[in-house]
Length: 460
Ligand code: TRP
Image (cartoon, rainbow, N blue to C red):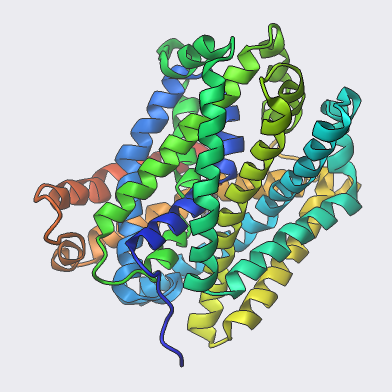
């Protein structure tokens, strides 16, 4: 066996893990659920969830990976106990399912980059951009499959090049580019007419507008956006050298993810609020905000929109790519570590089978009737909505719940303390973390799961 690959430095880990965390969750999902939940109070609760639940679980996942230097199944077995390997296995399965629908939305970004280049050079045609065009695109089965194939191909290519040579290298290039594009867009957004209203919407809390479902949705999204609950951070942590600090790394990933989500949301609302009357029309398809509402605005009201639009969708595509890479890596690393398969072969086989799933998902936006209309979960019609609902509402919270219980209650304190404390860590960190991982996180996550079981919450 070859020695296990590692990140070249702590920065390498931070960039790769931030690349995993920053994705469609930040750029597509967070803005629309913020919109759907009326801003302010929702954003505040989300930030609290990130700090109080996300951060401790992030530390726990990275710790388990770094300690064992194994992917989730082996890592949970070694760190917590044999039966806990099941939690790892469940994570691998969730990763496969999540990738099977995430790839579809990721694929749309390719089309939008191409379209925007066309509009920027040849002139904008609003008939090709509105809601009808979007529906036409997602119902075109051949197009869906082609776009997923392209995106999955790129993902497999990165993963098959390995941890330092593929994943880290991609993140080192893509993340700074992404951040740069985002800053350009951000400074641009400050000059727009809607900027003031946007900042007020996002940062002025009004608790009368936030119901219990909104609180739970904020908690669920904090898992999704930080890539927690299925072992992605265990896997990335397992490529970390023992000398690198878990606390510092987790802190950076959480900060980068949160800052980028906030920037993206400010940009999007500044654009949307600049157009009088648009606020009402967005309400009808909040999920389509990124692909229906925004394109037209880039070409009608955004200063320099012709240049910024293709850049923006490139950014979304890059963010999605570093996330699909992390999802595929969880599955691939299982086959490498536990089944002795070579990385190239594992990447091709796992990428190929996930692509198989994403073909079915791609046909579930209307192209194939049966796939698009069946309902397992109430009002979640079709394969895409079903998978999204199952992963976000069940799989990630359940995985996160068992992880906090396992790490908090079944790993010896001496071990977790030794993993988290090093010369650079202030003394209060460990006891605070222990309190959160034992009490706060399991209770909060347990509350989501209960709410879902009781049918109270639906956070899509
Ligand atoms: N965090 C990513 C996003 O916000 C999605 C993602 C990638 C993810 N890897 C994950 C979510 C692992 C949960 C678990 O788009």
